[in-house]
Length: 210
Image: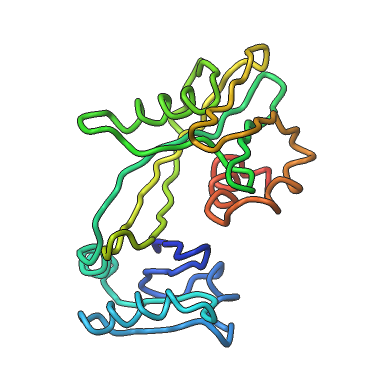
């Protein structure tokens, strides 16, 4: 298995080998490939991933656990959670924030259970009441710099259920200005106007959306 971390919507793979769904990146001219595990190699990869002309990165090592441990030590970690919400009509809830369609999510409060965080963020950002949380979940990683530090945000996403009969209420103070229940046959249009990690979440939690 591998870990995918997004740097400004560009994927970096931490992996022990090249898997089939990494092939398109592996053969791209602007993908950085490093097969060495050292402080210098990790720092070089982080630096390369921040360049505009870089398409993707692949950091290979035979021991994935050792690779993850060494790479993650370079970051300040921020836990977050969110939800992919489905209603009784099999529609998916999307929010419109900062010019893109997105899924509701937010940072975990201190002492808060990650599952509770996911429900709280969905309810705060959309105004709906979550009626059920599935055991089905996935995780995404996103990196950014803040005050001179490398931040790594790990977001845990849960599949949730809620009624479409409820009134939605966009949390405008979080720059959310619209909320749509999206039919499955219209998903592709919304996925073209969202972030790559959100596409990953939808395809992981709703395999039929591929």
